Length: 262
Ligand code: GLY
Image 1 (tube, rainbow, N blue to C red):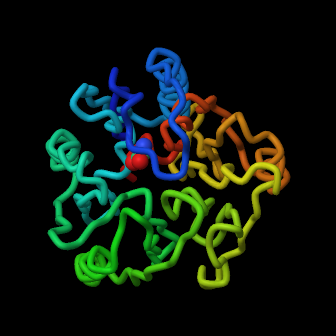
Image 2: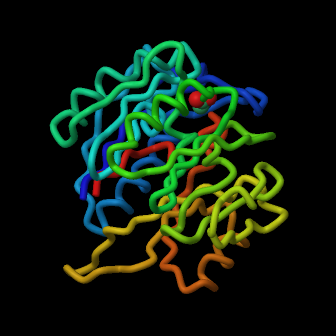
């Protein structure tokens, strides 16, 4: 199991912001938190490929938006924010060693943060970053592998995965204020605590191991949302809490910080 991550730019404070007011950001503190994130991935058996940060790309740590990896193929996206398109080259060079690649082309736009995979269904947020042409292109790329791709409206948040992430192929953690959960076909939706609207983003780690043994149901979740974390634990999940509040100021969440290869 491989996790591709990328370092934090010294220019983080100049990142794209859509729903948040800009506040001072501390790249050193963000790096310390990111180190805990990668340590958690390593602790359960992931090999972390840490790509170098770039001062040219303030958002480069959010590597998820640059590529979407499936077991069969990886798709280089075309981020909706023009300032982010140059982030792809370094990710592509790394990912091409592990997957054959397809690409989203103009006029399509697609951010990886909008792509939610639930078994054979792939939901794509129709957001300020990903458009219908991007959804159509992704659908055509994935058709040979029997995935069904569905566009889904999101409101009030940046990406679909701000509103919903997969616990496994049949369950999702959701904020029902930001998407119509009835559109997630056959999926059991676990709601965030209502006082923690930003808590729906987790990273499921289906390959997690300890001492060579499987650790089923392991997820990374942000330490800032303990009430939702308790809901996840009540499901019997193995919840690894990591601090991520400095990166949250840059409108990024945990899933944004890695591309996982299984
Ligand atoms: N700052 C994260 C993004 O807007 O893409």
